[in-house]
Length: 125
Image (cartoon, rainbow, N blue to C red; front, side):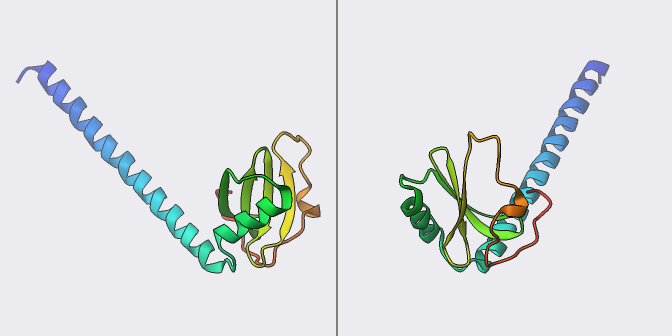
């Protein structure tokens, strides 16, 4: 076999193996994220829909997105309505606080109200 064909085959094989490795890493990360989401959902006492309704009632408007996450050790739903992020306690549905995405001065973590369900922050928050 000519050297150029050997090089082309080696390059192709390396690319295929590399792509497979990247796909495996992406799959593992997706599975880990799914497991974390399921773990957090099992701890929440209110549904995503209830959190959305509480946020929309509190600030008016329609939610763009709703995510269950840990924030400063508390399990919360982050509800985005326009440029406002509304943090809803995932344990009892109360509004903990709001933040405007345009504000540079965020509320100090120490002064934020804590939610009723405490969960250690994961490394990727």
